[in-house]
Each structure stands twice: as C-alpha cells, then as structure tokens.
Image 1 (tube, rainbow, N blue to C red):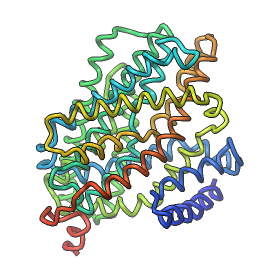
Image 2: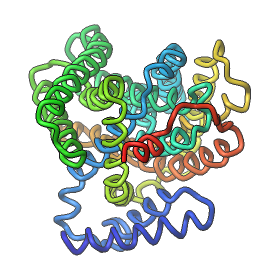
Image 3: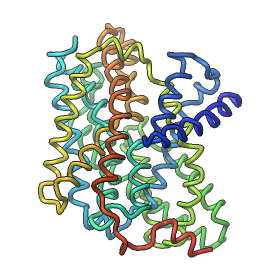
Length: 415
C-alpha cells in the first residue's frame, strides 16, 4: 500500500503539472492516471491500497467540504439563498426524471430501473465542483453576485436529494420499500438535522479552541477528526432509520467557525488547503481507479445518449432556478456547465443496484447496465465539465477588487 501511495503522489503531481501546462484542470490528469493504473487497465495498484479506497476517498471529500464550509460567507448566502435552494433540487429532479422517462427507449431497462439509474447519474460531483469554486472565490471572481458560493452550497444539497430519491426507487425495486412518504420526508429532515448538528458542533469546537488555544495545525486535526466521526454517526443512524446528512454537518461546522471567528477560520482553511494537495491526488486517482472502461464501452452510443439527454434536462433546470436571479446570460451559462460533472457519487453507489439484485436473487443484467452507464457518466462528464467550468469561468466571472479579504490575504495579515 505504501508503494502505491508513493507512486500516486509522484505521478499525480506530474500529471497535475502536465495538464495545467496544457491549460486544462489538473484533476483531469489525476483522474486519467487512476484509470490507467487501476484494476481495469494496467492493474498496477496494490490490493491493500484499493481496499482502503473508500475510506481514503471519504477523508479527501471531508477535507474539501470543510474547505467549502470555511468559504461560505453568511452575507453572500443571504444574497443567493433562494437560487441555491432551487438549484439543489430542480435540476437534479429534472435530470433523474428525464432519464427515468427515456431510459427504456435507449437501454434494456424498465422505467423503474431507469429511475434508479437517473438518480445515480443526477448527483453532481462535489469533488470536481467544490475545489474549482473555491479557486474562483479565492480570486474574488464572481464575488459581487456570489456566483461560486451559490453553486458551492447548492451542489452539496443536490447530492443529498439525489441519493435519498435513489434509495426510494431501489426500495421499490427490491421490495424493501417502507412508507414512501416517510422516505421523502427524510430529505428535509436529514438536511435540517445535518445543518443543526454541524452548527452545534462548530460552536462547541470554538469554545474548546478558546479555552485551550491550540495551534492552528492542531485545530485543523481536531476539526477533521470530528468530521470523520460525524460520517460514522450517519451510518449508525441509518441502521435505525434516522435520516442525517453528515456531509452537510461538516460544511456547517466550517460555516459557523467562519461566522464567529473569521481569522481562526481562515487559518484552518489555509491548513486544509495544504492537506488538499495530498487529498486531491488520493481522491481523483482512486475515483479513476473505480472506472471500468470496458464496461462503459458496452453501453455505447445508447448510454451516451441517455447521459446527454439528462444533462440537457439538468441545464434547463438550472436556467429555471435562476429565472429571478440578477445573473446575466453568460453567468447563467457558467452555472449550467458547473452542474455537469459527475464522479464521486457515481463511483460510490453505481454498483449498489447490482449488489442489491444479487442479494435478492434477481437477474443482474439491469444492474450491469446501470453500472456501465454510471461509469460512462464519469468518463464523459468529469473531463467535459471540469474543462467547461475553467474555460467559461475565466471568460465570464468578473473579478471584484472591492470584495472583502480573501482567505489568503487574511492568513497573511494574521502572521
């Protein structure tokens, strides 16, 4: 495992540098590196490294969502709150619903199987979107209208909605669905519970930090440790049927610390930024390693057509969500392309229907098709979306020179 980590660090940094030189997002280089070295192509990663893949990816995702929380300014959220809320469910529901409707026309799936596929594919990737939005926030691009913050907040809620709706359709399919109304009621409950717990934990951590005054590095380690435990609590609560969005709690923890102690928040965010260099390599190479290129190829143009139709519906949903926003047409286009990338959720739950069918003694052919299209959605949308975000963002978002201190400036001022 140690050798594979060393190889991924060195080659990941090289891939990042090469792709940046080509004026493309560095994460694409790391994603392709994972595909090539993964078990489905050259199979050069150690088994122990792949076995720890899920935990390593979760830790990396926690780090990036903590950074997101430490960049969520309350003033900006107040300005973009309505649009962020609408973008958290309208685009995803339109995308998932469209795939559920058209899936049987392109693929050997029923409407119910297509619905499961639709809401797997409908989840936007925070692993791709969040770091790119943070980069724009650091450079104060789009700061006046709070565009990156709006997308950053909405993308995280979008995942919660998509995963819960997917679980409802999976329950229908396997015959294990309980009260459907309770399932859907779990969406707002999990969101509210996650935010509330995160805010409380953030306040408690502030009291601890003020009482014992640990160094910024130790504060960062404490925040990461508590966040990992929050994810564990989510799994425990799921076993007893209590909805709880741990990743939203992680973001809320960072948000409240920023709200109460801005300088402290920027110091922790700076430390997280350094950790992200390592975490991003682990996240994107391991996501790439989950991609079975041959399986994706099997769905061919039919699978691609379903994905493109879903993206078109998602894009319409974004435009609907922004009807009353102050954004001009170019800025709305940026919001549209920012909602294209898929990666993290698809890699995590793409195989769940297949495993559920196997466990229930059902035919597994639909599960293989669902997994293949989920994999193809990563291969198609992650590079396309990341590149589109970079190109459109650089040409569309205006730099606000009068915005408040960025995190980098604040940390510099605190030294």
